[in-house]
Amino acid sequence: MRKLFFTFLFGVLVLTLFSQEKNQVIMDTSINQEILFGYCDREAFSNDLFKEWFNIEYESYEIDSVSLSTVDFENNLQPEITIIMGTWCSDSRREVPRFYKILNKLGYDQDNLTLINVNRQKEAGEISLDHLNIKLVPTIIVYENGAEKGRIIESPINSLEKDFAEILIKK
Image (cartoon, rainbow, N blue to C red; front, side, top):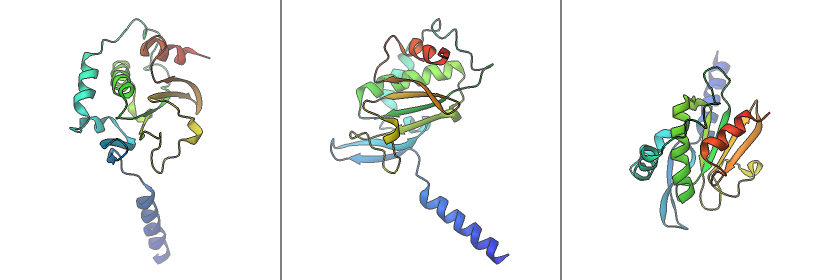
């Protein structure tokens, strides 16, 4: 019994030490600005530092529903999506709120979404991004069964809706 207790206590300690705080705000001294850093979720954009630009872009964006007509998350498995962004980046400030609005319209389960905020050096602290080959932000990566299916880098080629739908229907 004592051994089981210490094993449990050790497990809790390890999880506590290695779990990263979500929606962490840090001061980026290279730009003298507070930024989101590391793993985040939608709630991060309710912070006073970020909500104004997020909400303005989210609310004003007009979704092209026609381009999304081929996307049906209710009857299909939802892909896993990873977004790498920087709150200091004007492209991220434009595209990420728009993409959230698209996902919400589609009824996307955000439990399948990973949002990682980086500094200007494209680093996210303890989170290794080397395997993702991130050069520009935002980078939206769509996965199917653990394999990358496609990505939208910095700005869409056609539109977020068209580029996202093309990735989803790609075999």
